[in-house]
Amino acid sequence: MGYSQIDKEQLGTNLLEYIFILEKQLSFKLKNQLTDKIITKTGEYKIKNIESVATVNIDLNRIKIHSLFSPNGCKISGSILINVIAEVPNTNRDLSKRHLFTINFESTLVKYIFENETFEVLDKIGITYITD
Image (cartoon, rainbow, N blue to C red; front, side):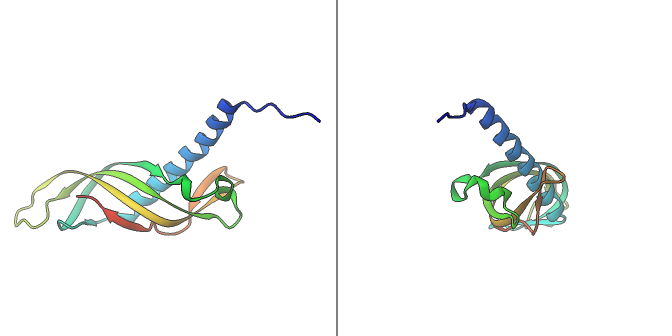
């Protein structure tokens, strides 16, 4: 009875490539979802320009890795960092400046599309909290 030799480093690299693809799709989806405003405890920030979007964390501890490749997709959670130029809330002037927000999200359905070797975000990103 033989055992396959697994190159753990290569396995980790391959898995990270899938995570990077997923992060890219989440960032793209959020950038298209947030078109006009971000609402926080401080107020409503009117977005002038989204400069960058980066996934900070996908909570892989809440799912089994193989469920990412399920034909039905799977729901994921995590946080995304977004850098925008937006109007300052609660001011009478047209004052815009750069803001950095962390957006927590939950229960966002994603599915791996084998034909294209990419992930698709199937519904709106379920935003649960946005930092000021």
